[in-house]
Length: 203
Image (cartoon, rainbow, N blue to C red; front, side, top):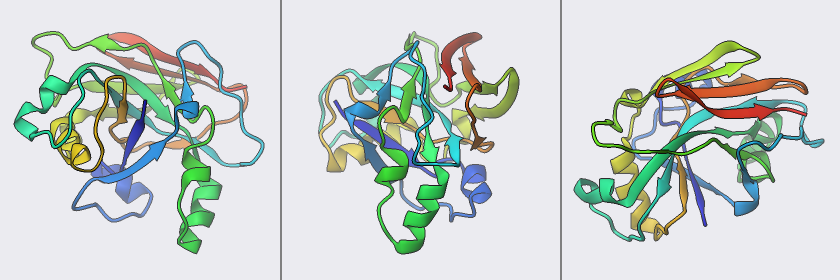
């Protein structure tokens, strides 16, 4: 399985990190060892002193596909959840200054936490899903997929131009504004559709 991530897909998040708003999706990938399954604690890595959370909608691919047309993209996923793209911000900034790839800052073990997946029932609009991340009981991120620069279906069409999508692949669709640091003993909880779908303890 693949974990395909989208960067800078909310304009306000791009601005808060002083990045340009992209004209095409910004993609990067994580290995399957990055997955942190529901109920598993996250252990703060020793190689960073500035670990950040980035909460985002995660789509699970349900059919194999290549060169998928946007109008048919909705046939290739069946459920969604929330995830955390953990980022070693200090390492990322060092890599960016040197013009080097970000993998050590974004793709390390456990850096892709996922919650419990919710089937997409009839009537759910993928382009109007509200979600929230709480840190230690206080809201730190509020997002709605309506604010995405590139919609889920557009992302699937674009991604499948370069990579064959396989059943079980995850797409992390980008984070809204409000990212910030986490510390040992923090707790991150993600909510959508009126229920908690993500719960990660930082140890």
